[in-house]
Length: 284
Image (cartoon, rainbow, N blue to C red):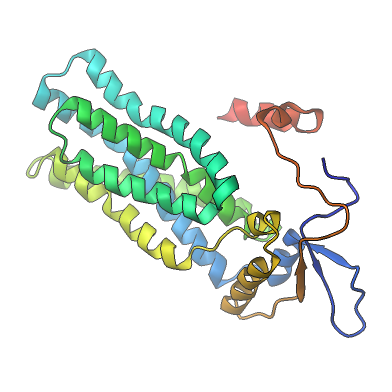
């Protein structure tokens, strides 16, 4: 466990007359850079990603009825199709969370987006309900990785602006639902449900292409892997895009005595987190 007096993720001011022992946390660095064009780009991507996730869930409303009519499905099979994507999400949350700790946030986020695109497109080609359920489950697995993306975006926002993502998420939830309803209105009567599923994957494809080029790795993860130089480069890019100068010069991952502990689910039930955990569970 971390000593309360230690700050493992830190910066050191080394300018003229500065004290090299003046440690700065990652949050202090982000606050020093401030909110700017870089974070706005990420917020837009996050909003589109939220809309895409909502679209993949809302499309089940139309998909269930169309598939039932085409294949004369029983109630049990219709229910299986509906829950498949949620079952996949649960699997994705468990698998990708651990993988993100081992291999980095960006790689796992991109894998998740690619899964949504690939298996979303394959869903439109499904020859029977069993294949369709399998592909929709795998789409759900990809969606399960997206919580990592939101964590990454929050890490790069100044503390006072982190509520912005929560507010925007409500807006983009509505946009996603509206988009898929309009798309269904324009395709189901003429092209059929397969084209509806096909077109619904296009926004995710766009996000994945853009994300591959502009999405950063998590500075926190880089520091946990003792890659301080790479983390400092990310902060320099953020400051540059925002038209500012990085407020601190040296990023350190070797502050004496710091130990990175491995969190577990039981940590959520520890005395200092129990109240917050119960409130979040109740709200969700």
